[in-house]
Image (tube, rainbow, N blue to C red; front, side, top):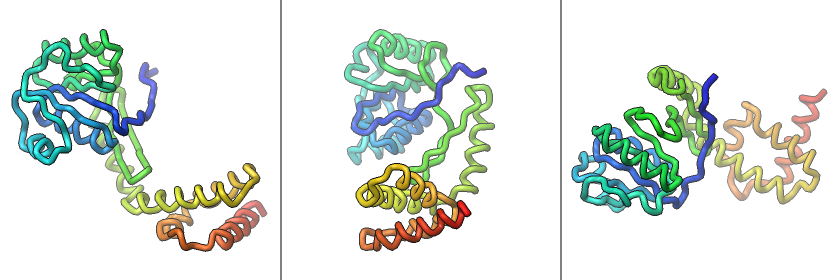
Length: 217
């Protein structure tokens, strides 16, 4: 049994610190930016990708080696240097400050591991082998990417709009849940991908009711 508890964190607007300026640090920074976090990278050197992000103002860069105190105000920390000693020091400071931290080199003492991730708009699929086989998790995510294509981003955006309008129009929570379940079937993929605010919500509700009754019968 794995000791890890799966969870998704809302990092929007939160300060996250990445210690390191290499390829691994860039991957961590990229993932945090996708989650709309405020990212600070601490490193005396940056690879081109991180330099470009810093120049574009997408990340804050502290041009220095890590020192105690660099984690002040952070909600999440990645230790992503090629120095086990530095990574251990980062984890130690994070632990003292009560900040969730991860060491990219797998150093003991980290609070979380990062799964392989597939994003399709609001759809976020993850896979992990709990550290025993990252390549396995990556392969599984690749297979899921073939099954759940880019069209799911538009589909879920439309479904979000539909959910909001159903909540405004359908007072009965039981019926509302039944209609949302019907709207979430595979056959609705293209239908909600094209939904806009001009759509006749009453006609949609009636259509969902008829389909739900047909499925029940």
